[in-house]
Image (cartoon, rainbow, N blue to C red; front, side, top):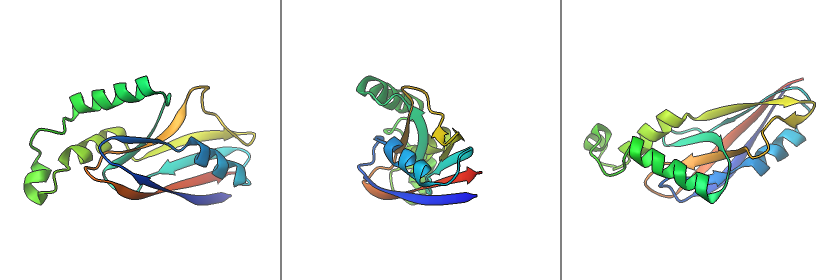
Length: 138
């Protein structure tokens, strides 16, 4: 069985971290799948899906770590070619990855107690995003 839904969100860009756990849980519950996988995927090359404890300290730590790893204020070859100023966004998204899979066991996602699913928009402008959630299993 395959069950697919979409989450629509508006973002601010610049490392905007949005908790999409409630939507993912709702889609999983709507699905007839009792045992399988939920895959959350963001189309595009400037966003990522991951998990984190969604609290202000951890979110700030992640943003600061990403700024150290792929600074937003240095030259990127992508920017020289396209002149859109979001080279750092592409690098961050490539490092963080566009999807995440979570096992479903007996109809429940196996997320840890403090683990939330988040979408991170790294682009240098606000965006409308469509996140694909696909539940696969029996």
